[in-house]
Image (tube, rainbow, N blue to C red; front, side, top):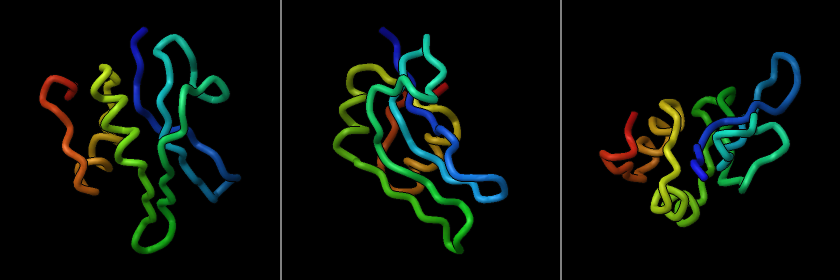
Length: 87
C-alpha cells in the first residue's frame, strides 16, 4: 500500500485551515485518512504549523511520500526529507 503525506483543507469559506495527514494513494483523504499528523493555519502572521515529528518520520520510513507543499513545510520546521522521497 502506497501512502502520501498531504494537506486536507478544513475550515470555512475565506478561513482555510489544513490538516497534515497520511492517506492511502487510492483514497481522496477527506474522510479515509490513516493518521492525522498535524495542522497548518496559514492566516495568522506568522503562519501556525504543528507537526508530530516522530509520526511523520515513521510514515516516511515506511515509504510515504510527502507532497511538494508538505515537503516545504517539513523542511521549514527542521524535519529532513530523504532524497529518495522527493518527487
